[in-house]
View 1 (cartoon, one colour):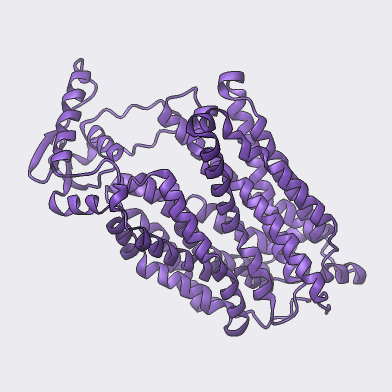
View 2 (cartoon, rainbow, N blue to C red):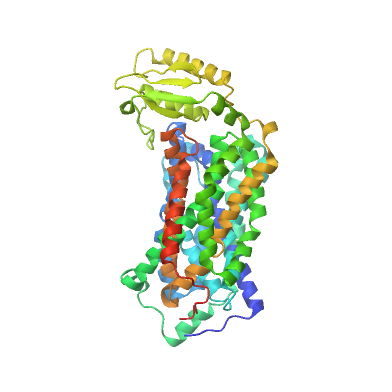
Length: 544
């Protein structure tokens, strides 16, 4: 089966309509993550603040968790009834769900119904996003002429970054216009309510589009798949390609993407204690400077191939993440770096006395001397190393040569002991010059932006050409279904859970860089599998 590409004018309209709609959809999806702290206070106030924030993060993660199921549902529809109609449905679901968040009563008004409805809306958003990307990428690729699929689909690849950038921009504008107090009280609803305007624009543009030429040809010839799920995932020949796309392509791409655009923001604000507004601006500038390279590497992939560019991004990430994040510390919070070198902090404890301090339901109490010591250091944002002591001994914290005994918080005088402990620890950390916040005057802004920009360039290497490659890996009659699942498992699970996984590793080890082993390991896995088994696809005829 062959097809002719659409005229250039029509193809430009296809790219603009598909990309603009997908930008708005990513904007909707990332609004929630950008305002997780406010969401936790508004909708999860029935538990303590720490548990509430964890619940908010878990609700955010729920949207990622269901993305593969959205890929199955809408991928099947896209292969049965058409690309255009399916991703028109997905954007309506996303836009309406986001708008409802903007008008949803809080926990203080309707109690437990508020977080339940919020989580249901997040699940709908995740399902919609699971169907949107595969539809947009497939639709654009099937309009593109041979030799330009990388260039054309790379515009779709800019949408996630632009959606994140747009959400940060709208939030910052609302904060500045309303002030922090009004924004946190009610102004946070405005960015969600704006989604209905963006939805109207997107639907209006997409209604004017025609179906893709490949799908029209299949429909005319009667060659559409009657069972896309069965053909995609019940036949070993295609399942092998799906697994290769996941482990040799999208898993590594996902961790590089989320490290370069999400974990950097987390690292700046939570670990280096950079003011949130400053950190948002630094990340937004790096995104703005890096975004054109999605298209540059997409165009380049039409000439040199998709595989070498994507695997180069994985290799550079695996080799340089540790020095780059140490550079972020050096330029964003030099006082923390200096304190670590002059007075390293050690937690000496019996390993059996230490717990994994993850408590999503807010019921467990971490009261052992080891847990008390580590919780205090994590709250202050102080890196530490672990040292094992004989069984039964009480934990102590060493700040340089100063020793601060911890305590068991179950005793009758626990409150007095806590006050004494916090005073002693605070005094020792202050004496060792551990900063409570990054000093704005000492942030080397140009160098921080340079490091962040390099991390974004890695994102553009792995992400710019990947839509074209995924489209080219699968036959047209099951393309929407087959490519969507590995993409959303890779990005929804391997990537979406990266912040939670890296945070858990850092909390357990005390080393602020230890969490980087997760993206480094996954990127290395993709590099090896991709190099050994991935075939170049740039010259494949996607009409068959």
